[in-house]
Length: 351
Image 1 (cartoon, rainbow, N blue to C red):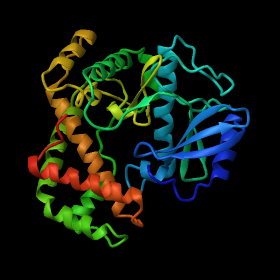
Image 2 (image 1 turned 30 degrees about the vertical axis):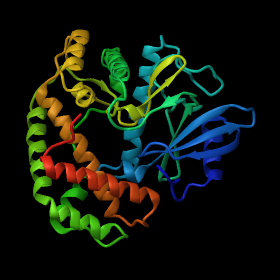
Image 3 (image 1 turned 90 degrees about the horizontal axis):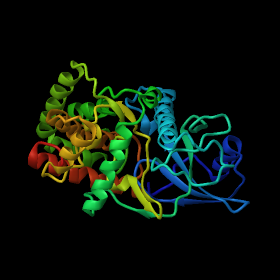
């Protein structure tokens, strides 16, 4: 996110880090990286460096009437599964407190548990805070994989995640195939966008112009989701949820997979729909490595789900009071591009 969240001061953040992790903060520097969570580089009075991530729980709701406690719990179990996965893939050598300052060896960048053993802490009613090791390495942006090496490295990591001990799954929630903020999107298509900020009217006009295409996509997704829910799927695994280039890093020790806030138990296609370059090579390699052949219907389901989630989250943002901030402007551009693509093809963006 480009801007720090309103209502969270550096003093409050430093105090929470001190209480939950016994971190003596010297400086906090906001880092406008990624889109969804807020990030700070943390320097301690002892010269250590950490990376703090804050999620606005209101934005993590799946429905407007969902309690913030439910959004926090969903984040907590996703990160708890990540800690368990890190331990499973690291020979059980998971870090337990910031006192263990050696960088983790697993490619799973998991949060550092609090002194109470939790994967994150609550800051007031509105925020969830997680602490991570600071990693000096190369970062990447959302989009296509810049090299074949990068794509195959992500496949290797996903194979390891999907074949990890089944016990790690007990920490995570199961994907219910619901589209977060679907209620906001449905209302916007039905009654329009209320006047609550500078982008309300343009968003309402954009949705009205392309309502038919959006409704067709929603109907197609609902049909696929109903078929999937009706099946007993013994292929479910722990999934990352968003293993695109922007959620990877590379340091001197190799490749890393970051940002596990969306981890869920789900069919493997949830992680695979955007990985193949279009020739089937990655999907074939996955089947060879795991014995599980990706299902084209489920690949289509999750391709549609990705775009619908983006669409619904962005529309929900502009149906709430907003000021026209830099983040609002960036979201508007993303929304315009997404709807143009959906209108042109009546389907999800290609991988």
